Image (tube, rainbow, N blue to C red; front, side, top):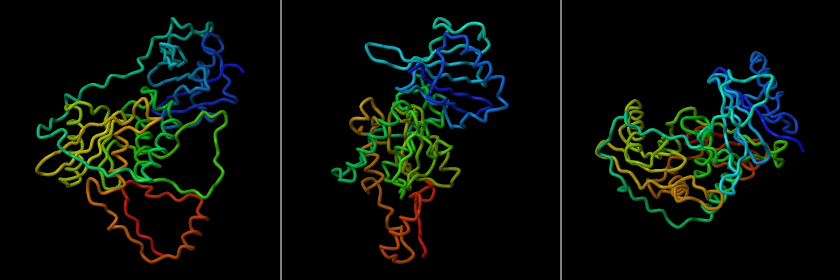
Length: 357
């Protein structure tokens, strides 16, 4: 079957990827591999065969290698499968581009191990919020409905399909567009903010080297269904979650608001916060993405789905949603049928939609 893999390329602050026919690629120890890398670097003015993407692709189960050429950082990272404690795990090794020799291939001894887990520094430089009270915000969800159970199943499928991105912290480290893309995907599932399409044919990529192409917020603070979402690298300590709240407070101050319901998300954890001019109350910090997320929903996703689809935390906003007229059922059916894709709440800023016929 041959060696399979793909290329990631970062140049001038932009990411590209190249997935060649049948995923054919050469092993690192072949001199041709180094010559190919040098050829790519010498041809940066011609990237027509490369696909522009928002972030690099990780190693997937049907690939042997992923070569990541970071011209901006001057490094080459080669990710391959290695066995640790009887389990195959991605093993990234790195070498400076300046050390590549076109007359020889690369040996494993030449590569420096890249830590799989990137340590997140404590936000010691961020303004402190001493009035934060942890575990004092109590949210009481009702038993899950049938629709909630369907949400939980969709979230498990999501985590399984995109497990190679989720299991690779180097790909979705904060801040990055991969982080934002995974976060908004799970938020939209939790809010039933999904796309309705009349197309019954689903185009699966050849060789199943998947990539999440949906749109994601460019910033780490944004409004979503009436809640202020704050993406943050780490919120499992009081210092780190206080830094995230301070970031939200500054955003609210600039927006001339002094109160909001916050959803603070680090992908590993989620917390819910009420900010007002008088106090700041924070819920328990709950696990969000865990090792078993593809098999069972975490407590964090369950509570997030309750919050976004019910009035268990704050009053429902449904009273502010209305139609301009009473459209007939068959009219709506025809509209949905002939629309190739109808996106519900496409923009997180526009939660309310008034239709005029």
